[in-house]
Length: 184
Ligand SMILES: *[C@@H]1O[C@H](CO)[C@@H](O)[C@H](O)[C@H]1NC(C)=O
Image (cartoon, rainbow, N blue to C red):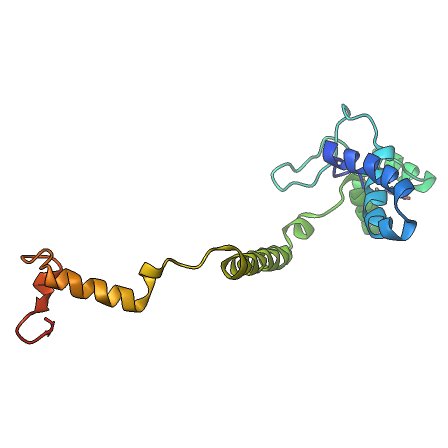
């Protein structure tokens, strides 16, 4: 597969993965190794980056180069036959020629993928994880709320504000009925 190009980050990972292997036990880096090994072998196959690349895009019907340019002998003779009249080609030969030139058909490109489920699942997983961190902080990290937040304190504060007749025209005390002793 030469459709994806390794980023500088991937190359860094490959370098460090090699060094890690000498430091840690083989078993410890096995999981990391299988993924990076695939990426690193990809990097070593890396051809000249200035050459045209192949990619499947619906808005670009003709990629810059054929999908497969390492052909077998039969495929090469088929390519020669392609130069002649196309009505002597069988359907199988036409399909084979198509697959040499392109990786996916338009129908294959348009096929809906269920990757959104992974994305959404990952999103919810990390939101949930963040929620647990916040919960842990509320229990173990944050200080207790100040005593002025106590229910009893707040009740006393409301009583005092009413006694002081705070905002008696349109505000706080205006909502209190002093004769009945209740909120209006
Ligand atoms: C290109 O064709 C050869 C011969 O058929 C095959 O071995 C190889 O896997 C193909 N490469 C790709 C990228 O499909």
